[in-house]
Image (tube, rainbow, N blue to C red):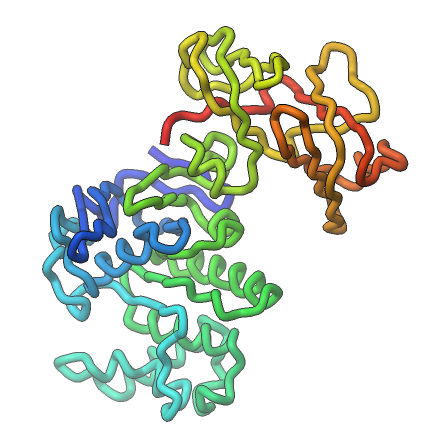
Length: 375
């Protein structure tokens, strides 16, 4: 079995790591709640969620810095829940890099190799350090001190120090959080290219949804210590399982509705206020049931007047935000409240003079929304 991700194709079935009913308690706090997850060899997996959701706890258990309270962890088929960090085929890049400022770049990269027993030959250490620095495009920087390196260069030193040990899994704990937006975008692409060239399994912890969506083969959405949904970026964006995922991955209008009719893959619902619309239904909801419908802002359209046969909501523009390639509108509906619509610049040109205070029609094309399951 394989799955295409938009980045590359990963063969499922060859698990490099696995959480099996894994939980972690800190006193009365349940930080990780019965995690069950297979991580495939060579994939780029992200744990995504807000602070306190359990994503860092999962990473630290995998690294060996925390021991599960219940359940187990397998790495390359071996049970390692009680195995110390230094005996695991895993390396970690921390948010603040944890580099030694009194050492040169090359000495930092060589540090882990020098701790090995039996001792590794100096010539072999030098060869592997040079290769690791070349891999992260820092081949000429070995003699420099850490304080002479920029933030992006320091991150690459931390990566070189991690990959020089040839781990089977590389763990990344929000490694780009300290970088500015432009450098972060550049480093995301560099990191993705590095992962593809090395073929190592990368596991990233982040609260940045754009970072996870742009880099990952699969994303594990975490909430309250639990795995809320696992899937490719496209699956999570197009088919969120519940309100939590829809609200966290991208932006969504989440509207109350009642089911009129339902069949496999489709349902007709009535939004609060009486408008009947056709939506996607990943499951067959019960007719008459109260549900929530998520619709992405870019799936809606705006017009000065209704279009024949297209359901429409009359609403008033309260805010307009210019983003260059698109405009974001916030509109007020008397029953549904605030509704967000995102339009490309070309579509905006069809709305001359439609600024704040204008009365517009929100057009709902068939299948634009999605019936959400329970959290």
